[in-house]
Image 1 (tube, rainbow, N blue to C red):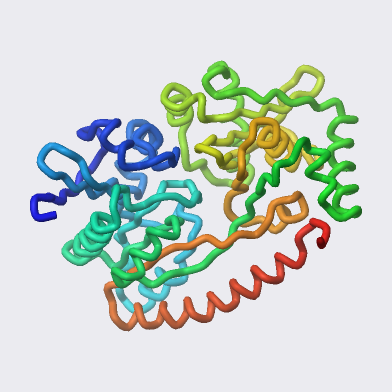
Image 2: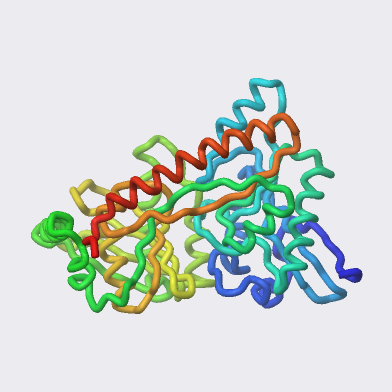
Length: 375
C-alpha cells in the first residue's frame, strides 16, 4: 500500500477499459462501457448536475482500485431520497449542494461501488473518498445501492447506513411461465391470466430482441416511448437518444428490447439490461394507453424470457407495490451516508433509526402479502 497513489479523474477517457473492468467484476452498470457511455453522450458532466470525480488508485502503471464518484448539485436520478435533508440544510442557512455521491447515475441497481481485488484496498478507497469530501468542503457523501461487503466497509469508515426496499423476481428453477404461476394462490394466478388474456385478445403481440440485433429504427421507437412517459408528466427524460445508441454499439448483446405491436403498429416498448445472471428492468413507454400493457411488457414478458434463458433474478427497479401481485418479492436495499456537519449528522442518525424501524415493519407487511402459496 505504501506505493499506491490516489487521484481524482474527471472522466474515464484516460483509463483503459480493460484495466477498469478487471476490477469491476461482472456488474454491467459499473462497467467501463456503461459509465463511459454516460460521459461520452453528455448525460453526466457539463450542466447535468453530475460531475464525474472518479477516485483511482495506482501502483506504478497498474490500476489497483477505483470508485465511481460524482459531485452533485441536485438529488435527481438517485432513487434514494434526501430532499428533506437538503431542505433542512437550506432552512438552516447552510448549503447542502454540492455533495459527493458514489452511484450509477439514473440506475438503482445494487452492485460494487468499491472496485478492488482485496478488502484492504477497498478500505483505503473508502477512507480516500471521505477525505476528498472533507478536503473539498462538500456537505456530505452518499453511497447508493452498494453490495453488502461494500456497505460494511462504509460503515467501518464512519458512514451511517440506510435501508430501503425494491421488488425482485427470483427464478426457482421454473420450467415455464405456467409453472411459475402454479406456485401462486388461485386468485392471484387467475388475475394474471386474465390480464394476459386481455392483451392477447386485443391482438397485441411482442418482439423480444437482443439490443445488438435491433435496428436503429427500433431503438428510436423505444426512445420515443421512453420520452413520452416523461412528456405526459411535463418533464424531460434523464437520458438522450445518443446514450442508447452508445449502449447498442458497446454492450448491445447485454440489452434486451421488448416491443409491443397491434395490427402492424408498434405501441409500446421496454428496455432491460442483462448483467451476468440478472435482468435489470430499466425503461418503458407507450404511445397509447392500453389497460395491462405495462404489466405485460415490463414484467410478464421479461419473466418469461428469464425462465427460458436461465436468468436467476429480475430486478424490477425502485418503488411500486403493484409489482408484488405480479410475482416480484420485496427485498432490502442499502445506502451509506456521511454528513460533515456534526449536528446534522446526529439528526440524520436519529431519523435513520426511526425510518429503519418503519422500513422493517413495512418489509414484513409486504412479505405477508406475497402472492405465493404458503408451504
